[in-house]
Amino acid sequence: MPVITARNFATGTQQFLSMGPEDYLRTLSIGTGWNRIRIGILYALSTVSENAWPIRNCSLCLGVCNGIQSTPAVISPAHAFGWGLPTYPAAVAANNWAYNAGTGGNSYFSQTAWSFFRYAAGVVTGAAVGALTVTTPSNTTLGGASARRGILILDINKSALIVGNITQGAMCTAVAHMTLDMASADLYAALASPAGATIQGTAMSTLALGNSLAFSETTNGPLDTVFLFWSHFTVPLQLYEIAVYRLG
Image (cartoon, rainbow, N blue to C red; front, top):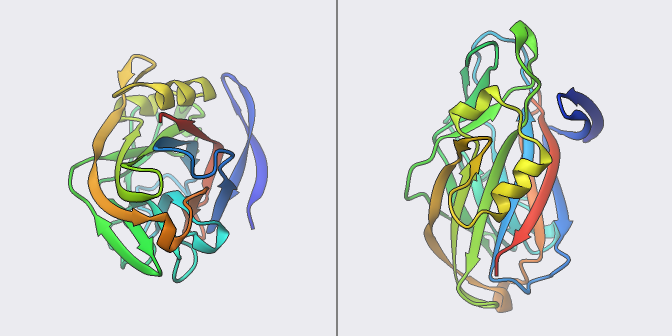
């Protein structure tokens, strides 16, 4: 069961949702009336201890689906598109989240494996052309480390409103951001950027739109709900904010 708690940052105290393993879903106020949206989260990953242990065999997924019955947390989602790190839950994931000591005690986790995916009538299809390293701050404040949050953004583009193809891209905080704390204003600026965003003087890591997969909301149901899924029991994901920005 998710737990709401709070942490202190240089910008003030912020509540967060501690997830592990859970999913979080919200119905889009615009329904399916969009061609392109970005879904962004302000987040961090917990650490068990500062001993270079990776996070093993867990999945972080962000995307859109056909209501709560189509979240990737269920066995056979009816209709969902998203981005899975290192992959979608139905796959056997052998790619751990690597621990990095960072500088000044500002440790972080990194992931180089990922897959965009589509669920249609319970059948999953993955697509993973391109390269992107996702870096995520830990929640440590040991060794003089700053309390930090990171940014993760999924970019979803539909070629038509109801039936067509979906391409997906992504943005995330880079290694150089791992000594910095990202705030809500940084998340909003990254979501609204026309291309690759520069946040606090450092370029975000970016993966351009691609990996086309066909979709049909007529056949499989409307993509009207945003989901976030994290599958690890002992290392919670800290969700500080989730936002959706419509580009078209």
